[in-house]
Length: 396
Image 1: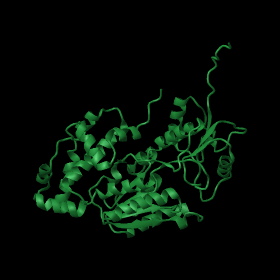
Image 2 (image 1 turned 90 degrees about the vertical axis):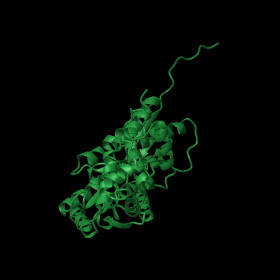
Image 3 (image 1 turned 135 degrees about the vertical axis):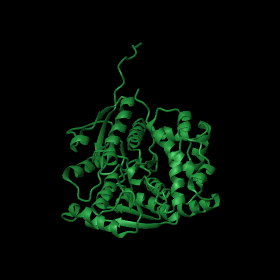
Protein backbone atom coordinates (compact mmCIF):
# COMPACT_ATOMS: atom_id res chain seq x y z
CA UNK A 1 0.00 0.00 0.00
CA UNK A 2 1.34 3.42 -0.97
CA UNK A 3 1.74 5.89 1.84
CA UNK A 4 -0.73 8.77 1.82
CA UNK A 5 0.66 11.99 0.41
CA UNK A 6 1.31 14.68 2.96
CA UNK A 7 1.96 17.38 0.35
CA UNK A 8 0.02 20.58 0.83
CA UNK A 9 -2.71 21.22 -1.78
CA UNK A 10 -1.62 23.45 -4.64
CA UNK A 11 -2.56 27.07 -4.15
CA UNK A 12 -4.63 28.79 -6.83
CA UNK A 13 -2.88 31.58 -8.70
CA UNK A 14 -5.18 34.54 -9.47
CA UNK A 15 -4.49 37.74 -11.39
CA UNK A 16 -6.23 40.98 -10.41
CA UNK A 17 -6.63 43.01 -13.60
CA UNK A 18 -7.70 46.54 -12.70
CA UNK A 19 -7.97 48.76 -15.77
CA UNK A 20 -8.19 51.64 -13.29
CA UNK A 21 -7.32 51.50 -9.62
CA UNK A 22 -10.11 51.30 -7.03
CA UNK A 23 -8.69 50.81 -3.56
CA UNK A 24 -11.83 49.30 -2.01
CA UNK A 25 -12.14 46.69 -4.77
CA UNK A 26 -8.49 45.78 -4.34
CA UNK A 27 -9.03 45.37 -0.59
CA UNK A 28 -12.16 43.24 -1.07
CA UNK A 29 -10.44 40.86 -3.49
CA UNK A 30 -7.39 40.64 -1.20
CA UNK A 31 -9.57 39.73 1.81
CA UNK A 32 -11.14 36.82 -0.01
CA UNK A 33 -7.77 35.75 -1.45
CA UNK A 34 -6.35 35.59 2.07
CA UNK A 35 -9.20 33.34 3.23
CA UNK A 36 -8.89 31.11 0.14
CA UNK A 37 -5.08 30.95 0.42
CA UNK A 38 -4.61 32.19 -3.13
CA UNK A 39 -1.45 33.47 -4.73
CA UNK A 40 -2.72 36.91 -5.79
CA UNK A 41 -0.91 39.08 -8.34
CA UNK A 42 -2.04 42.71 -8.50
CA UNK A 43 0.67 43.98 -10.86
CA UNK A 44 -1.85 45.65 -13.14
CA UNK A 45 -3.26 47.61 -10.20
CA UNK A 46 0.05 49.42 -9.98
CA UNK A 47 1.31 49.76 -13.55
CA UNK A 48 -1.62 48.79 -15.78
CA UNK A 49 0.36 46.05 -17.51
CA UNK A 50 -0.07 42.28 -17.65
CA UNK A 51 2.88 40.42 -16.06
CA UNK A 52 4.99 38.94 -18.90
CA UNK A 53 4.36 35.22 -19.34
CA UNK A 54 1.66 35.05 -16.66
CA UNK A 55 -0.04 31.70 -16.27
CA UNK A 56 -2.55 30.99 -13.55
CA UNK A 57 -5.97 29.69 -12.61
CA UNK A 58 -8.30 32.68 -12.85
CA UNK A 59 -8.74 36.44 -13.20
CA UNK A 60 -10.76 39.06 -11.38
CA UNK A 61 -11.05 42.00 -13.78
CA UNK A 62 -12.27 45.59 -13.66
CA UNK A 63 -12.18 46.38 -17.35
CA UNK A 64 -11.57 50.06 -18.05
CA UNK A 65 -14.10 52.65 -19.11
CA UNK A 66 -12.64 55.08 -21.61
CA UNK A 67 -13.76 57.29 -24.51
CA UNK A 68 -10.21 57.18 -25.92
CA UNK A 69 -8.26 54.08 -24.79
CA UNK A 70 -4.60 54.20 -23.88
CA UNK A 71 -2.37 51.53 -25.37
CA UNK A 72 -2.07 49.60 -22.11
CA UNK A 73 -5.85 49.72 -21.46
CA UNK A 74 -6.44 48.25 -24.90
CA UNK A 75 -3.83 45.57 -24.17
CA UNK A 76 -5.59 44.63 -20.92
CA UNK A 77 -8.94 44.18 -22.66
CA UNK A 78 -7.36 42.10 -25.42
CA UNK A 79 -5.52 39.94 -22.90
CA UNK A 80 -8.61 39.22 -20.82
CA UNK A 81 -10.70 38.59 -23.95
CA UNK A 82 -8.35 35.86 -25.17
CA UNK A 83 -7.28 34.21 -21.92
CA UNK A 84 -8.22 30.54 -21.35
CA UNK A 85 -8.95 30.65 -17.62
CA UNK A 86 -12.14 31.68 -15.75
CA UNK A 87 -12.71 35.43 -15.59
CA UNK A 88 -15.09 37.44 -13.41
CA UNK A 89 -15.59 41.04 -14.51
CA UNK A 90 -16.54 43.81 -12.06
CA UNK A 91 -17.43 46.22 -14.88
CA UNK A 92 -20.19 46.38 -17.48
CA UNK A 93 -18.20 48.36 -20.04
CA UNK A 94 -17.91 45.38 -22.43
CA UNK A 95 -21.25 43.56 -22.29
CA UNK A 96 -20.36 41.62 -25.46
CA UNK A 97 -17.64 39.72 -23.57
CA UNK A 98 -19.17 36.52 -22.12
CA UNK A 99 -17.99 36.92 -18.54
CA UNK A 100 -19.95 36.46 -15.32
CA UNK A 101 -20.15 39.79 -13.55
CA UNK A 102 -20.51 41.28 -10.09
CA UNK A 103 -21.79 44.86 -10.32
CA UNK A 104 -23.24 47.60 -8.15
CA UNK A 105 -27.02 47.96 -8.17
CA UNK A 106 -26.82 51.28 -9.99
CA UNK A 107 -30.55 51.98 -10.23
CA UNK A 108 -30.85 51.48 -6.48
CA UNK A 109 -27.87 53.83 -5.97
CA UNK A 110 -29.55 56.59 -7.97
CA UNK A 111 -32.89 55.97 -6.29
CA UNK A 112 -31.34 56.09 -2.81
CA UNK A 113 -29.60 59.39 -3.58
CA UNK A 114 -32.88 60.89 -4.76
CA UNK A 115 -34.88 59.58 -1.81
CA UNK A 116 -32.37 61.08 0.61
CA UNK A 117 -32.72 64.49 -1.05
CA UNK A 118 -36.50 64.20 -1.40
CA UNK A 119 -36.71 63.63 2.36
CA UNK A 120 -35.01 67.00 2.84
CA UNK A 121 -37.97 68.77 1.27
CA UNK A 122 -36.56 69.84 -2.12
CA UNK A 123 -38.86 70.41 -5.09
CA UNK A 124 -36.23 70.71 -7.84
CA UNK A 125 -33.63 68.06 -8.64
CA UNK A 126 -30.68 67.79 -11.03
CA UNK A 127 -28.52 64.90 -12.14
CA UNK A 128 -25.08 65.80 -13.50
CA UNK A 129 -23.11 63.61 -15.88
CA UNK A 130 -20.20 63.93 -18.26
CA UNK A 131 -20.53 60.41 -19.69
CA UNK A 132 -24.20 59.78 -20.37
CA UNK A 133 -23.55 56.74 -22.59
CA UNK A 134 -21.81 54.69 -19.89
CA UNK A 135 -24.14 51.94 -18.60
CA UNK A 136 -23.40 52.70 -14.94
CA UNK A 137 -24.31 56.37 -15.43
CA UNK A 138 -27.48 55.64 -17.38
CA UNK A 139 -28.66 53.26 -14.66
CA UNK A 140 -27.90 55.65 -11.80
CA UNK A 141 -29.60 58.53 -13.60
CA UNK A 142 -32.65 56.35 -14.37
CA UNK A 143 -33.02 55.39 -10.70
CA UNK A 144 -32.62 59.01 -9.60
CA UNK A 145 -35.06 60.38 -12.18
CA UNK A 146 -37.70 57.73 -11.50
CA UNK A 147 -37.69 58.47 -7.76
CA UNK A 148 -37.90 62.23 -8.36
CA UNK A 149 -40.84 61.95 -10.77
CA UNK A 150 -42.62 59.41 -8.55
CA UNK A 151 -42.48 61.98 -5.73
CA UNK A 152 -44.03 64.61 -8.02
CA UNK A 153 -40.88 66.75 -8.13
CA UNK A 154 -39.12 68.44 -11.08
CA UNK A 155 -36.12 66.77 -12.76
CA UNK A 156 -33.30 68.56 -14.60
CA UNK A 157 -30.44 66.95 -16.52
CA UNK A 158 -27.07 68.71 -16.53
CA UNK A 159 -25.13 66.95 -19.29
CA UNK A 160 -21.54 67.70 -20.35
CA UNK A 161 -21.14 64.52 -22.41
CA UNK A 162 -20.86 66.18 -25.83
CA UNK A 163 -18.23 68.62 -24.57
CA UNK A 164 -15.96 66.32 -22.54
CA UNK A 165 -13.78 65.07 -25.41
CA UNK A 166 -12.86 68.49 -26.84
CA UNK A 167 -9.52 70.22 -26.31
CA UNK A 168 -9.53 72.20 -23.06
CA UNK A 169 -12.79 70.54 -21.99
CA UNK A 170 -11.65 70.08 -18.40
CA UNK A 171 -10.66 73.74 -18.08
CA UNK A 172 -14.07 74.85 -19.37
CA UNK A 173 -16.06 72.41 -17.23
CA UNK A 174 -16.24 74.18 -13.87
CA UNK A 175 -17.26 77.62 -15.24
CA UNK A 176 -19.82 75.91 -17.52
CA UNK A 177 -21.19 73.88 -14.63
CA UNK A 178 -21.48 76.99 -12.48
CA UNK A 179 -23.51 78.75 -15.17
CA UNK A 180 -25.83 75.76 -15.49
CA UNK A 181 -26.62 75.63 -11.78
CA UNK A 182 -26.95 79.42 -11.57
CA UNK A 183 -29.69 79.20 -14.19
CA UNK A 184 -31.68 76.46 -12.44
CA UNK A 185 -34.45 77.17 -9.86
CA UNK A 186 -33.31 77.37 -6.26
CA UNK A 187 -33.07 75.73 -3.85
CA UNK A 188 -32.17 72.63 -5.82
CA UNK A 189 -30.77 69.20 -4.91
CA UNK A 190 -28.22 67.55 -7.19
CA UNK A 191 -26.52 64.19 -7.61
CA UNK A 192 -23.27 63.53 -9.42
CA UNK A 193 -22.65 60.18 -11.11
CA UNK A 194 -19.59 59.68 -8.85
CA UNK A 195 -18.14 61.53 -5.85
CA UNK A 196 -15.61 63.29 -8.08
CA UNK A 197 -18.40 64.71 -10.24
CA UNK A 198 -20.37 65.73 -7.14
CA UNK A 199 -17.31 67.64 -5.94
CA UNK A 200 -17.19 69.38 -9.34
CA UNK A 201 -20.74 70.57 -8.64
CA UNK A 202 -19.61 71.94 -5.28
CA UNK A 203 -16.62 73.78 -6.76
CA UNK A 204 -18.67 75.16 -9.65
CA UNK A 205 -21.41 76.44 -7.37
CA UNK A 206 -18.93 78.09 -5.04
CA UNK A 207 -17.30 79.80 -8.03
CA UNK A 208 -20.74 81.00 -9.14
CA UNK A 209 -21.50 82.41 -5.68
CA UNK A 210 -24.03 79.70 -4.77
CA UNK A 211 -24.15 78.33 -1.23
CA UNK A 212 -23.75 74.64 -0.38
CA UNK A 213 -26.18 73.27 0.82
CA UNK A 214 -28.51 76.29 1.18
CA UNK A 215 -28.84 76.97 -2.57
CA UNK A 216 -27.61 73.65 -3.95
CA UNK A 217 -27.56 70.45 -1.88
CA UNK A 218 -25.24 67.80 -3.32
CA UNK A 219 -24.88 64.05 -2.99
CA UNK A 220 -22.36 61.77 -4.71
CA UNK A 221 -21.85 58.03 -4.98
CA UNK A 222 -19.13 55.62 -3.78
CA UNK A 223 -18.36 57.29 -0.43
CA UNK A 224 -14.73 57.73 -1.47
CA UNK A 225 -12.98 59.20 1.60
CA UNK A 226 -10.74 61.51 -0.45
CA UNK A 227 -13.65 63.17 -2.22
CA UNK A 228 -16.23 62.81 0.55
CA UNK A 229 -14.12 63.93 3.50
CA UNK A 230 -11.33 66.05 2.00
CA UNK A 231 -13.14 68.08 -0.66
CA UNK A 232 -14.13 71.76 -0.39
CA UNK A 233 -17.27 70.76 1.58
CA UNK A 234 -17.77 67.40 3.35
CA UNK A 235 -19.76 65.44 0.79
CA UNK A 236 -22.84 63.28 1.39
CA UNK A 237 -22.54 60.08 -0.59
CA UNK A 238 -24.36 56.84 -1.36
CA UNK A 239 -22.37 53.88 -0.02
CA UNK A 240 -21.96 51.65 -3.10
CA UNK A 241 -20.15 48.84 -1.24
CA UNK A 242 -17.18 48.61 -3.60
CA UNK A 243 -15.20 46.51 -1.14
CA UNK A 244 -18.05 44.00 -1.07
CA UNK A 245 -18.10 44.00 -4.89
CA UNK A 246 -14.43 42.97 -4.89
CA UNK A 247 -15.00 40.34 -2.24
CA UNK A 248 -18.05 38.83 -3.97
CA UNK A 249 -16.25 38.90 -7.32
CA UNK A 250 -13.40 36.86 -5.88
CA UNK A 251 -15.86 34.52 -4.19
CA UNK A 252 -17.64 33.93 -7.51
CA UNK A 253 -14.34 33.26 -9.28
CA UNK A 254 -13.45 30.68 -6.61
CA UNK A 255 -16.83 29.01 -7.15
CA UNK A 256 -16.20 28.76 -10.91
CA UNK A 257 -12.60 27.56 -10.53
CA UNK A 258 -13.93 24.73 -8.34
CA UNK A 259 -16.26 23.63 -11.13
CA UNK A 260 -19.37 25.60 -10.21
CA UNK A 261 -21.68 27.14 -12.80
CA UNK A 262 -21.64 30.92 -13.24
CA UNK A 263 -24.92 32.85 -12.81
CA UNK A 264 -26.87 33.71 -15.96
CA UNK A 265 -27.23 37.36 -14.97
CA UNK A 266 -24.88 39.76 -13.14
CA UNK A 267 -24.83 39.60 -9.35
CA UNK A 268 -25.89 43.04 -8.16
CA UNK A 269 -24.58 44.41 -4.85
CA UNK A 270 -27.06 46.67 -3.07
CA UNK A 271 -26.01 50.08 -1.76
CA UNK A 272 -25.55 50.48 1.97
CA UNK A 273 -27.43 53.71 2.61
CA UNK A 274 -26.30 57.33 2.50
CA UNK A 275 -23.50 58.82 4.56
CA UNK A 276 -24.89 62.26 5.35
CA UNK A 277 -22.40 65.12 5.52
CA UNK A 278 -22.54 68.89 5.21
CA UNK A 279 -23.26 69.05 1.45
CA UNK A 280 -26.87 67.87 1.93
CA UNK A 281 -27.42 68.32 5.65
CA UNK A 282 -30.24 70.81 5.36
CA UNK A 283 -34.01 70.94 5.39
CA UNK A 284 -35.05 72.81 2.25
CA UNK A 285 -38.41 74.09 3.40
CA UNK A 286 -39.42 77.72 3.62
CA UNK A 287 -42.16 77.06 6.15
CA UNK A 288 -40.91 77.93 9.64
CA UNK A 289 -43.10 75.40 11.49
CA UNK A 290 -42.00 72.56 9.22
CA UNK A 291 -38.34 73.54 9.55
CA UNK A 292 -38.63 73.51 13.35
CA UNK A 293 -40.25 70.07 13.25
CA UNK A 294 -37.57 68.57 10.99
CA UNK A 295 -34.78 70.07 13.07
CA UNK A 296 -36.33 68.75 16.29
CA UNK A 297 -36.50 65.20 14.89
CA UNK A 298 -32.86 65.34 13.76
CA UNK A 299 -31.62 66.59 17.15
CA UNK A 300 -33.58 63.99 19.14
CA UNK A 301 -33.01 60.75 17.25
CA UNK A 302 -31.68 58.95 20.32
CA UNK A 303 -34.75 59.86 22.36
CA UNK A 304 -38.17 58.21 22.35
CA UNK A 305 -39.60 61.08 20.30
CA UNK A 306 -43.34 61.00 19.60
CA UNK A 307 -45.49 62.84 17.08
CA UNK A 308 -46.87 64.94 19.96
CA UNK A 309 -43.32 66.03 20.83
CA UNK A 310 -42.71 67.11 17.23
CA UNK A 311 -46.00 68.99 17.06
CA UNK A 312 -45.18 70.84 20.29
CA UNK A 313 -41.74 71.84 18.96
CA UNK A 314 -43.16 73.07 15.64
CA UNK A 315 -45.35 75.79 17.08
CA UNK A 316 -48.45 74.87 15.09
CA UNK A 317 -51.39 72.50 15.34
CA UNK A 318 -51.21 68.77 14.68
CA UNK A 319 -53.59 69.04 11.72
CA UNK A 320 -51.68 71.93 10.18
CA UNK A 321 -48.34 70.15 10.57
CA UNK A 322 -49.75 66.94 9.06
CA UNK A 323 -50.85 68.90 5.98
CA UNK A 324 -47.44 70.56 5.65
CA UNK A 325 -45.56 67.26 5.94
CA UNK A 326 -47.77 65.65 3.29
CA UNK A 327 -47.38 68.58 0.87
CA UNK A 328 -43.67 69.39 1.29
CA UNK A 329 -41.97 66.27 2.63
CA UNK A 330 -44.16 63.68 0.96
CA UNK A 331 -44.90 61.51 3.98
CA UNK A 332 -46.18 61.65 7.55
CA UNK A 333 -44.48 62.94 10.69
CA UNK A 334 -44.17 59.40 12.07
CA UNK A 335 -42.61 58.19 8.82
CA UNK A 336 -40.00 60.96 9.01
CA UNK A 337 -39.13 60.02 12.60
CA UNK A 338 -38.62 56.41 11.53
CA UNK A 339 -36.72 57.37 8.36
CA UNK A 340 -34.17 59.44 10.28
CA UNK A 341 -33.75 56.73 12.95
CA UNK A 342 -33.21 54.02 10.32
CA UNK A 343 -30.75 56.20 8.43
CA UNK A 344 -28.72 56.64 11.62
CA UNK A 345 -28.98 52.91 12.39
CA UNK A 346 -27.61 52.00 8.96
CA UNK A 347 -24.59 54.16 9.66
CA UNK A 348 -23.87 52.31 12.90
CA UNK A 349 -24.32 48.94 11.19
CA UNK A 350 -21.85 49.81 8.45
CA UNK A 351 -19.26 50.78 11.04
CA UNK A 352 -19.73 47.42 12.81
CA UNK A 353 -18.91 46.52 16.39
CA UNK A 354 -22.09 47.53 18.18
CA UNK A 355 -24.80 44.98 18.99
CA UNK A 356 -28.26 45.52 17.51
CA UNK A 357 -29.66 46.26 20.96
CA UNK A 358 -27.10 49.02 21.47
CA UNK A 359 -27.81 50.46 18.02
CA UNK A 360 -31.54 50.38 18.74
CA UNK A 361 -31.01 52.38 21.94
CA UNK A 362 -28.77 54.91 20.16
CA UNK A 363 -31.45 55.47 17.52
CA UNK A 364 -34.52 55.86 19.74
CA UNK A 365 -36.01 52.38 19.30
CA UNK A 366 -37.38 50.44 22.27
CA UNK A 367 -35.29 47.37 21.56
CA UNK A 368 -33.56 45.35 18.83
CA UNK A 369 -36.84 43.63 17.97
CA UNK A 370 -38.56 46.90 17.13
CA UNK A 371 -35.55 48.01 15.08
CA UNK A 372 -35.56 44.76 13.12
CA UNK A 373 -39.32 44.88 12.50
CA UNK A 374 -39.27 48.45 11.20
CA UNK A 375 -36.09 47.83 9.19
CA UNK A 376 -37.80 44.97 7.36
CA UNK A 377 -41.07 46.84 6.87
CA UNK A 378 -39.61 50.09 5.51
CA UNK A 379 -36.46 48.88 3.73
CA UNK A 380 -37.55 45.43 2.58
CA UNK A 381 -34.57 43.72 4.19
CA UNK A 382 -33.90 42.52 7.73
CA UNK A 383 -31.44 44.40 9.91
CA UNK A 384 -29.27 41.30 10.27
CA UNK A 385 -29.23 40.78 6.49
CA UNK A 386 -28.29 44.43 5.91
CA UNK A 387 -25.43 44.10 8.37
CA UNK A 388 -24.27 40.86 6.75
CA UNK A 389 -24.31 42.39 3.25
CA UNK A 390 -22.52 45.55 4.33
CA UNK A 391 -19.83 44.05 6.56
CA UNK A 392 -17.12 41.81 5.15
CA UNK A 393 -16.11 38.65 7.03
CA UNK A 394 -13.13 39.16 9.30
CA UNK A 395 -9.84 37.69 8.05
CA UNK A 396 -9.09 34.26 9.50
